[in-house]
Amino acid sequence: MSPKEKQCNVENCSNLSKKTVSREKAGSAMKQAGLNLDIRDKVTKVHLCAEHYRKIKKQLKKDREIERLRWG
Image (cartoon, rainbow, N blue to C red; front, side):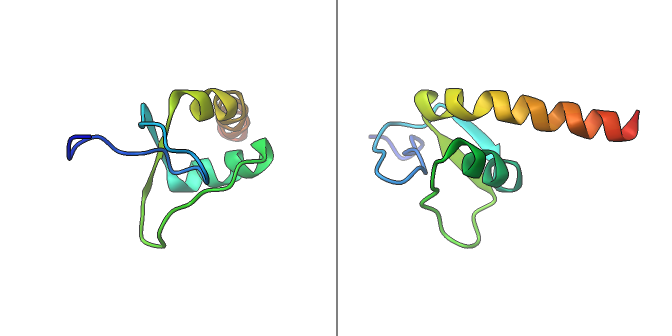
């Protein structure tokens, strides 16, 4: 693994990261998807493998739609 490659931040996952999401947004979506994060306190971005990103992608989309409706 090269220095730029990161591992997925979901507990018990050792796959390489494909996407990053802000910790703030990922926190709520991960809880609703039933996944636990394994990260330090001062981390601002969450690294996710393709499999786990797929699981929270729909929830992130719903969150964005709700946020847009509040501004509408």
